Image 1: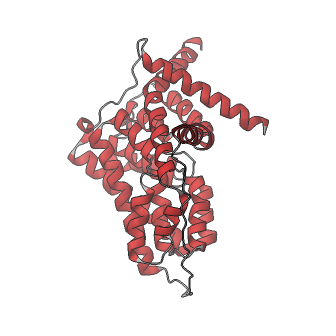
Image 2 (image 1 turned 60 degrees about the horizontal axis):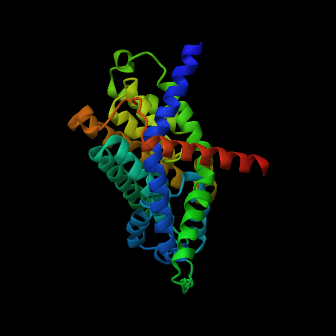
Image 3 (image 1 turned 90 degrees about the vertical axis):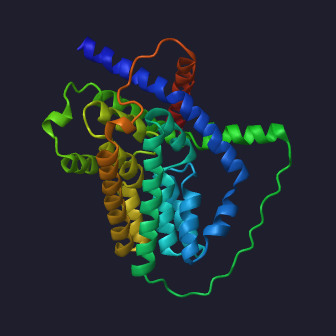
Length: 331
């Protein structure tokens, strides 16, 4: 029993070491992006009912560091401001699956080829959902008033800019991520304890895909917290394509998101949403496994780290998680 606990703690710490540097840098990049790309600017370009808005919603959604639960109120707001259901559906898929922070961490952990597939699958699935939405969802024709968007002129004060960026990165953005990130690392550490090679029991790729899909669709994981789980899935024998499915469907789908889409946008929108994600993730998973396979993944197993700067970042990340969990508990 003590040996299992020790291995779990070791896996947990090694996951922190593997991810911490890139998560913290990714959060800072997200803060900088948020500072120079305010919400009103996004609303101006997505708040329309044109085909171009579908493309814009994907391009805007991919780098935004917003999780699947946080993106729902934004999507509803865009819908109320005049955006088409198709463009909002595309936005609701592209945004939580990727994000500048999660892209950065994915590249650091899995490598460039795998990251490119993750981003490309997000683009394809989002556009596919938008195209289907334009075809099958009929919008009520209403006269929409074009809102004049006034961007707040920020004083060019370096000190204020740094304070805003740090506050957004490590307070506003990280606060809702703290709990799912901790759960993701814990789950990844537990999965890594499994002493079997799943591929020797389930050697059929599509069966692996279905197993991962059944695991990922109903639960809530953000794009960053899904990374240690995906990494641990590979370490116990799941194919890289299976991990890619988890990284797509995990952040994009959960019970809360699906219920909200059904209530706000209707059953057609929900059907398009789910079918686009499932078909697209399966397609890119198969392409990755068939064309590239294991050689396209930078690393598949968490390995122990020797004492270096990553442990300092791991400690900082752990302190941030504990701080926000205590803060949420007090509330």
